[in-house]
Image 1 (cartoon, each protein chain N blue to C red):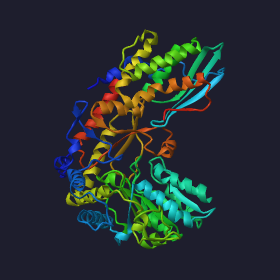
Image 2 (image 1 turned 180 degrees about the vertical axis):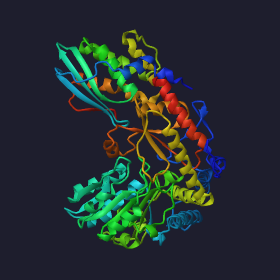
Image 3 (image 1 turned 45 degrees about the vertical axis):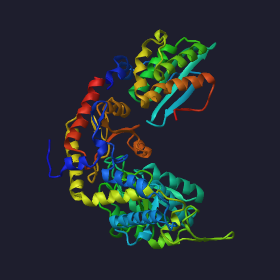
Length: 148
Length: 409
């Protein structure tokens, strides 16, 4: 049996209740929608990039605690990052929530709170929706991202 | 905790899957609207088919084929009797309610409906009773119209007279809503549709486990159901159609078993019901569904329906006392489905926390996105009860809700 608190850690409950970087970014130069048709989670990422750097980033939309907290924590960590750094974090985060292999997660900071997701396979897509959306923005995709 | 005279312990003992723990806790299965559990009698008959007489039906001269054919056709008679159809010619086996609706759309409707004709459905339909009509509308130029629903999740009956016009060729609606639990007044609607010359299809997927069906009394033209919601196997369902309509309809799929004679130039189609059953069917599924009906006829089904009502009433009572719990679907005439949201907690999180307590509920749009749009919510959590659920299962649900509150503080 899993302790449900392993999934819903304080950090996640807090970021769900008070999501950081929530709301439209007026001077964004990149915007993309992400959608999880399975549970209806929808979010929009707003990114302002300059010189291959994420100068500012925000999101809005609706979703479960896992998806909202993940987007809140992700946008926090992404501010000021170079795009290739962002991609490296994407890979690391993906590893964190899907793999049992040990890895150094100090770089992920508070995002480590989402590690519990890997014990709940049905919820991995909730945590990764915003990340896939960001990844698509960086790759230059224009089509909305769907987890299916 | 309330009490009634229904012997729920005895009913539970018939369902092997219920005798297990999930995440270390006794399984509380409250996802019956998605699929029901299967009694041992159904599981055993599936076993017996594959162990003792697996063979193809209708064409074999050998012993096994004859045993299988008899079992298959006697299941058809079970279903005829259960829904009180005139003849087994009116009982067509399909994969499920969804395929039944698609069949009617692509045969009856496609050959009868022209550009500008109207198909009337409702805002509370499952996607299975929306998308086939959207496809048909695109193919034919017909117009799809919706009967709206009110805040309680009931059909807005005042709008019906304006929506049912001489252009309406078909009314297709759900008997009991899977997302809201609403029981629709289909008798009255069938009569109204017939008054203006429209045909009526009833989606009974959610209704058959909760109510007696009598297609002659209803006088509906088509009625579809899914075996897996009726304690039978998945992948098997029934389309009932009035014989005269089925006779006049072109076939759905071509293939073996649906023909009398094939030459290189043309084909003579088989008689009903085989005309609509091309290819080797889901033989085990049909036999299993027949066994499910035998099972229902053995138990105290009227008592079971009353027990489900009692469960719903008890759940409603507890819901009234639960702060921040909002019921979605509060129709006066309702079956044992409790769709709800909790303030500040997303239904998907409710689903996960419940699962951790051993409680299986549904979270999502329940394949009824227009219903979610109507109530302006992305999703609901849904607990749906069957007769093998107990009052203590209802208590467990509300303890689960408490647990959600604890986690989210």
